[in-house]
Length: 124
Image (cartoon, rainbow, N blue to C red; front, side, top):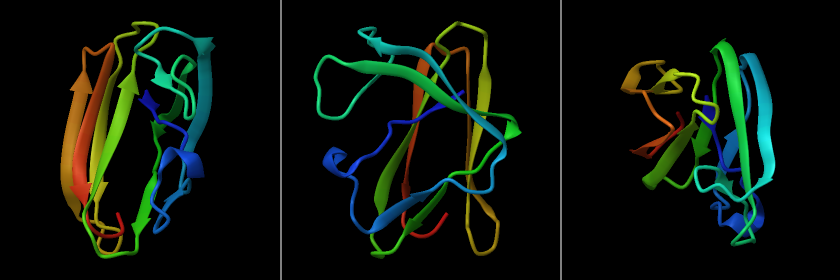
């Protein structure tokens, strides 16, 4: 289960980036708890005490496209949450948007909460 912080202008997302939720294959969202004070859940923007345990998921896969237009490298992180300890395992593939070439592939399994981060400098 891929869990993502919902970005808003107040959360500091750079103006030159765009998160595009396209090309989903079986994508759905799910909320386990909102609100919750449990620390594995993501902290909501603009608060120090309110958290949400929610996810985006797909029956096989889904795509999150990032279009970085400023030519600079940006650190991107993906957060994974197995809230109900179901033994989930996930793989993240970073691919070049133009060629489709896989630039990086990382797997996570046996996690309660885990993150993967990487530097991206063009549309992926």
